[in-house]
Length: 212
Ligand code: AMP
Image (tube, rainbow, N blue to C red; front, side, top):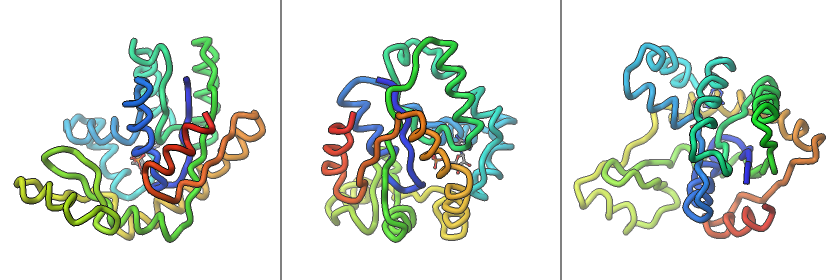
């Protein structure tokens, strides 16, 4: 199964990709996670990417294409993958089509996670990661017990650098201008499937699996 997950920041792509990965044993390939790892490693490239990411802008197409082509050549991606956060521009979508064509492994579907703007804002501003377990939580949606499970074990609820209001609003604009056109791109190629991504993680996951 080779899938692209489309959707605005905060639509739940990462959460659903992780669930599908655990369920079907195919890797989640997240350009955002790979870029954050490069930033954390403090490489020269990571330092360049950091300021772009903190502003909520997009890292250049050729850079992400390089990261993706290396990643998809790894053995665990041979039987499928879930692309989370890539492609984000028309050029990236064209590059991906060409890359998969060369590999002889076409996409099966592009799944759009559809969510209202207000819910996106709440998901993004409330998003936290437990420093101990890496578990994704949300101060608006997670139960008090879940939040305390992290803090009482000595963990901290960490907010992503780019989850502040100013950067969030730029990321949403960038999404509208550069990524939203990909909905039509995949619709024209008969690959688009859309799901209502408002609801609990399990509800959305059921809809996700049903369209695959
Ligand atoms: P994400 O975790 O997918 O929200 O990505 C976080 C940030 O990483 C984005 O706001 C961009 O700055 C950068 N990024 C992730 N994926 C891409 C991509 N496919 N193209 C360009 N920049 C990206």
